[in-house]
Length: 398
Image (tube, rainbow, N blue to C red):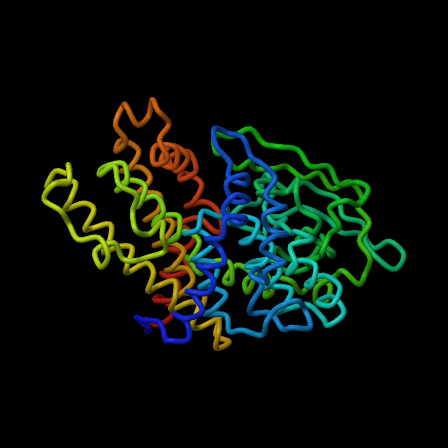
């Protein structure tokens, strides 16, 4: 277990923070931030970040990265959120699809797709979930039928984010429909601009919109099959583990707690300048208009955040050394998503009527958080499934 950062990591964090605090990046981040159910196009911001080499620092240089360790990529992810950069495009494109392609793709696939993703010129999304296949991906029904030297995929995928802005979809489909529940599933890289792909929005309450993707005999060349046909189930489990570091949920929880503190004190929290934890940089003041009950709860949330950060970094450190631990990732995902959801629910009543009426920065963040939070314990695996993974592991040990 690690509890601190090295001098090199702190130095790198400072460099990243300085770049993200530039006027040009801050202006682009503001334009890319959604509010009141309106979701702007964040791609110009990510092209700017790609030009500065910040999107995939841990990828090999030949694929558009800088050959840095995964831990430094996690530092970039932290600083992006703390600088006000909407992170969903980064999470989906780099942290999930790109990272999985780096792990499981062949050299030709990596050369073809990764550099554009690293430069912020192309974007990706995950196409796993279906109307009748959520946490249990073994229930998926999308089919990939052989067609010449490739395949044609038909099916419906739901609840993906930013999908109308992306170029590439990591899609799970059955190549052997008559095989067992967890056999005969394959993974493909689908061109989202190909004929037969229809993307529509699913009505929701969040500022980021979910999408429905209809795949109608979409042509996919054989070169865009990941791994061997029908053998994707182990790859899917690895992909989901990579997705469940918990860091992205931790960062949401941190941002929402800081917004609550800002609303309670009418002071911008130090985390917005990139400092953590608050107790180290912003000593408690007797003049703060905070009740003893609120102060106690803030302390409890800060302690839970510290624990959550340690859990996320334990997973990241394991991934950096080549270990994929399904139990650790399940614990990190469960704790971080439940914590973020709880903070959002508690903080919803923090802004004053005046702050709500004036749409203050903190009130806007917490309003958005309250609407986003219900989905956190569903996406990337429900809390119930995470608990099942942990319980099954202990049952095996017993």
